[in-house]
Length: 340
View 1: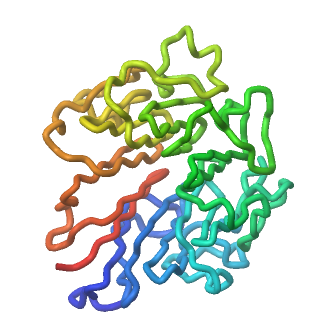
View 2: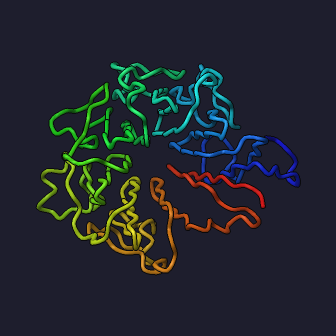
């Protein structure tokens, strides 16, 4: 990191752009020498990077200790979390003010804000360093993590989904509970293959390719007809998507769905985040993004009010780079690339 612009290491780079409160609103870049960035996650104003050597780097706002570096000081460049060096970090998920981390052994750590129990540690005390969530053991291998405003989720390789934190809108799928401070299983009787936590709503995909949504019902972001919204606190299947669903991404007020054949969007659209070519204010009916139907989309991502897609051949926004991963949240966005 910190190399001259003309010297681009072959191992990779991270690019950031968007609005932040702690740095100039201009694109930035960080070179990683001999350690390829493999996984990225953005919170409202903080970012996590996992590298090929299983190291965790954090930077950004740190008012709640969400960087897990042992302090609350803002950090403006990727900084290695030394406390986790003995672990082989696999995934990270950044929420509004907290961070989740999983290791190859199946351990899950959490740091940051905890006013709704989103750290899963059994209390509501914030932490400025990463603490082990004792609920998860090596018997449960983690496939995916996700974090919403004040919610957290962990999906195991066996298809079991666990969620915790704020449930004021039913966004962790537990009908009559306001919040929980330890992981609770959420199930519809079928194995789950994908999970996404939005600001105040969530969605998951079953191994059969069915999409379920739950949480805050406004603006059509659950994709459910009006008669089903009375049960918005419980996971319900979304009608109107005939193909098998592969991935889902939840934003602030909208939802994006990747199927085997197309990309669907629904919810709030006043900023163009539905990608339909019009500034449709809102819709609860899943609609296909027609003008990209000929592209093979491999990944989908949502920020609060914007959306990004990656094709199977990468994105050519950065000339002479192939895009590996793109993550966005709040009002900033981050990409990882490697040289030709």
